[in-house]
Image (cartoon, rainbow, N blue to C red; front, side, top):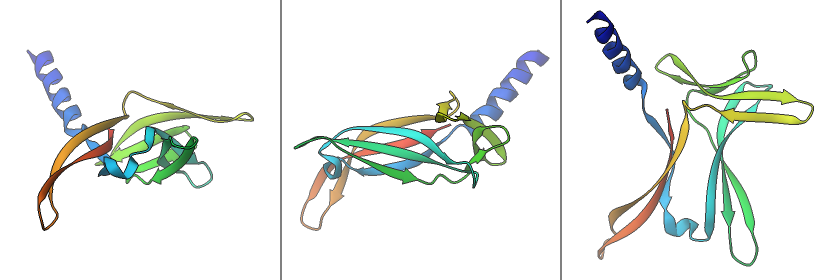
Length: 142
């Protein structure tokens, strides 16, 4: 019985930290030429900073690529442990591990932080009529 109670308490504590952070939320018509969006962690080792970089691939007359950096509150890089950490209410979640060598920087995501893309519809009143627009929301799920 004590084992079951301890397991239930630990699952409750873990689920209390489960959440998501919004990185991007825009109408899809703003990115109508975008064929894909990829999210990845990036770091500045000297300053101990980390952020999410979103890579947009556009199609049209030729491929166009552009990046958008997103600051995430509580996200940092620890150069001692070589980890990208997300601080949630005082609890450190390891989002990625980092290896730095003469070939460059290699960042490997853990299963504790994932990116999710979701399309959804919202009704907007433009002052003349109510229309439905599609939006894309990208979140960091922990």
